[in-house]
Image 1: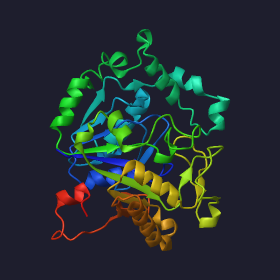
Image 2: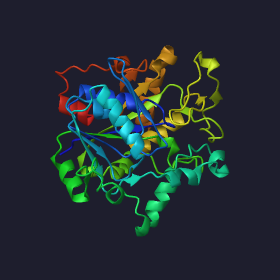
Image 3: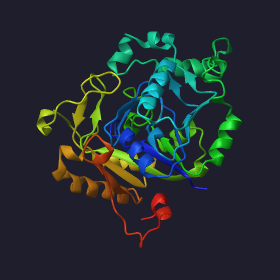
Length: 355
């Protein structure tokens, strides 16, 4: 059964994955949302009432009215304190009608991981957020049973988490039983470890196949991939690496916008011109069925041109993809969806990307 939709960033990150995740969850029929976040990325969603939430642990799709199960995948690295903060914030907004599940092999971020990266000159030179992600991942890979940092070892006996930490078998049974699943990826394709910008990259690949694996979801369930992009791609501030050869760095003043700050480190973001090379590579690697084109309010006159560029890139790669969603602001009310004639396409066909 094809029932899992994956959100994947087609650029350097910060394209609005949190926004489209919240939008899809509030307008769709998902009963399960999953992610495998790490502390080096944050995702923001603002609902129709103006409630703003920034998640580094929980998926933004938690706001969906039909969502019953919220899953923190085996590839996750998370701070317990941060998780509790996010749950408290959601509860205050009335988002509390869901069950939280954490895979036993998700990693608990410790202070020692943050200290191991703090002030590291090499990490600073490549624009790392220095949140402890790599240190925690390395410790998990080293498989040191004396210092087991998995959720199963660290949290299963704590009162709040007792019953919320589940085994691989239990996880697979829940995935199998779900009706519709929203899988939320983090960061962006171009930041992937093997995407061409090493060492100016993150600590894993950022593709649908990698995120499915990190979330413990079989490729058998994949229904569609929703790619996200923005008119002016960004990178984190500092010496965060080069760009594509058909792209150049510009200033925020040149596009008439106030500088954006990164969600995690509060650094001023670097901003660039559009790159067809970037989109073509991302389409070849990620095969998005549908695209969310965001920050269209920055240059509304360029939107139609970029939609054409995306379609052309897909055709050049031998793959059919189209811009179905556009974003013109920071809230769920600012997301527009292409209206398709129901006489021409059933909901199932739309969700599969057959158009």
